[in-house]
Length: 364
Ligand code: MRU
Image 1 (tube, rainbow, N blue to C red):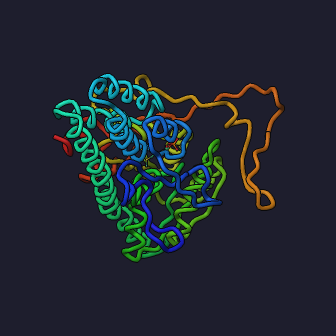
Image 2 (cartoon, protein in one colour):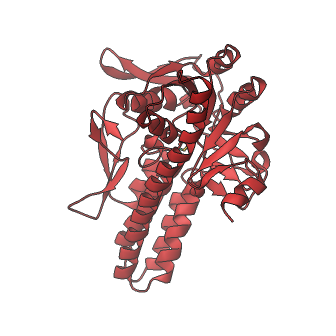
């Protein structure tokens, strides 16, 4: 999608030197568009863990390129053990988004079945490129299907503005291009539908404020930043027509893990009879589990992300403490929205009912 009118993706192989990839450093947004290079498996693991790149689909794609970089580092004598260690290192970076493990397994399968180190390197690059290309296409298709829902609501409102609430960043910055939740919004814009997006700031990392507000602004989408607690009030006053969020892991029974706070939005939406959709590609479905609350591992991050807030002051990025220095804090990264609160799951194959039968129907 666009940054200052120029088309970007979040990750790309260097055109002249295929021994490294470049990524947008999302820690610097919205204040600076900083590009950094990832040249080793350790740098790929660091980028995922420290949220240089983030968002379920993008960490999967980055991990696949990390495996390719591992094949470049491996020698003929230590290849298998080197690849296994790289797999473990990358898998340990973040626990909740299943796309990470999915992409690592896809890559490992291909590398293992290929003979000879040179061929393994070519195969690892090919699968990373493929995972990236597939992600772009899946996100595009998610938008095409999601557009139909927005179109219907717009029709019911006689063409009046459709107000969509979103949480965290499930935009192109969380994927490679298009985004999951935002893809439908970008397709609606192209279709000439009047839309306005309520953007949850999404404490503690503020992905809504720093990333979603940034990308919607660059794309010319009418939007308003709100504090995380404002959604319920807006819903009670008829100011939200639908909610669309992304997901980091969906169970085979349709429970959805997403950024912490998503569950509360779903409860408020249910109470106010507002459709609540989750959008994600197939790589986000974990077919091995059913009960999201019991079975999805929830990432706990450093408490300083809660205690400190960072922003721009007089042209400089500053981090400030917002509580007494010794206050204990906890930092759960994700929560699970049970399928009963979800109106539908927007996928690249169409819109599924949030249930085992609904998902199976699309992914037989
Ligand atoms: O911690 P993050 O920024 O990686 O969390 C991202 C989210 O929760 C997104 O909403 C999710 O990955 C949706 S996917 C586009």
